[in-house]
Image (cartoon, rainbow, N blue to C red; front, side, top):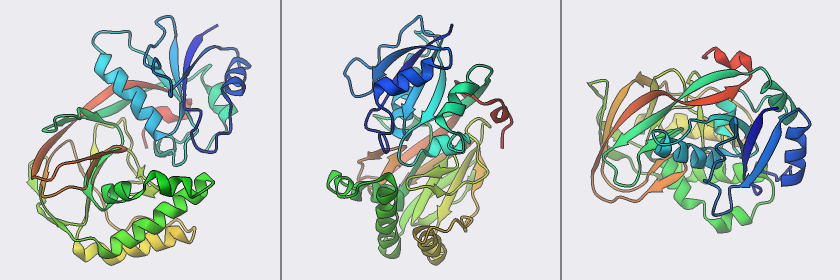
Length: 306
């Protein structure tokens, strides 16, 4: 019987599962499960006897666990990671096609899974950030992150209402945001200019389910950069309005693919994954893909990169 350590965010998403019911569900499929709450101070103490880790939560919880694994990968046992996407947006789970499956089907798949290498992206030029899993960028999106305060989050009830609120705030920002001057080089080619938004993507979607990079896969060794200039503002606004109406349409700006990216920009409004970066001077940051540095346990169909 395989032993799994569950790192669970009990406040994630709609809080569908209590710790007890989630552990019982996992063990009903023939696994032994150690429970750890991501809200406790000692959650980073992974059990050395565990065969694999389970992350039960949203994108933020995945990032927290990945940060620990990446910082300790030379010193400690290398854990394989299974994901139960229980958060609000679940952008990582959606990219890996897990959000299409029930929790029961995901757990069942761990008996005969595919072990899929997943990339992380190394950041050089920032003092307090080393890696990201999802995306890195500046402009409209981190401005939205700054605008969504705890007060706003408490004012809505369901995850769906929270996402709707975020889209409505994003629309207002997109209508008024001033472009930022930036220098951008992708595999040595110059894309410098003034942009409302620049997002370097390792997955397909960010934030309130903004699918900016529909063909991306976090295990292919490639990054996709989405650049939104003033000429693209109307396209972006139309895209957000359609999302608010509940319609899914293709993102109107194509991404630029590359392996090594250097960016510098003037002013604040930058982020790495779900963390806002507070810098007011011009920054130059280099991004390098660390191909397959993490190992995820996924249903076998996910062994094919899409």
